[in-house]
Image (cartoon, rainbow, N blue to C red; front, side, top):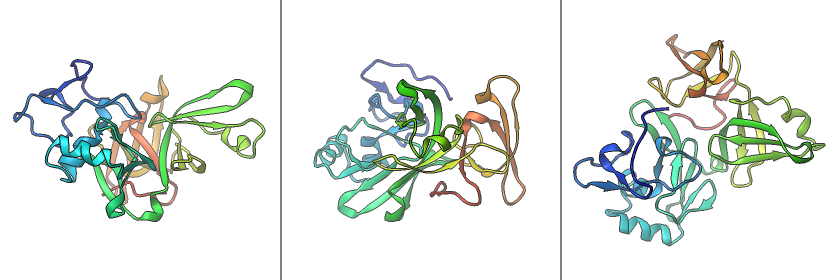
Length: 251
């Protein structure tokens, strides 16, 4: 999942920060290191950098921190005040004073891009199942790509359907309540988008899945509407819908 970034526990040198961060590499020595949270360092951007360098709402990190302290920024429906909070794939950013909403989508040039979406779409998020397990009392627990856990009670109406869900399938959930609205299976014929690796941002239908050993390393072939094809490993692919994406996933 990209190169390793070494540094101290509290600080991060700009020279080794993820290459997709929109920061100047040689102007200063240090930059913001993301707090432990829903996304890893290599797959996220700190919210302070987003406000300062992506949207230009602040000229300095001090100004960005002041904006966050005024409680006018939400991520996935919850107010964020920590300038180190990591923002990543499929997160929904809400700029409350302007009533604007943005979704983080994969992009071929920048890896992650903020795309403005309509308010009616802002209450939904597409998340990938990374772990499925049975917990106490036989309940089902799904761990999603953004670190959140969704619990399905045994005996509930949703349980009989959810038992068939597999890792790397996708769930359309509400935010912040995280109720499951829809399920997108990872299978041939499904519309999907590449979210990491060399082909990030490529969207097409899954033509083939070739598994030899570990499922996450299976080779997946996708084909877009023009006939162009892309091949990458399964863990880099996110199912987004059957006929069309359930939410905005491209710029």
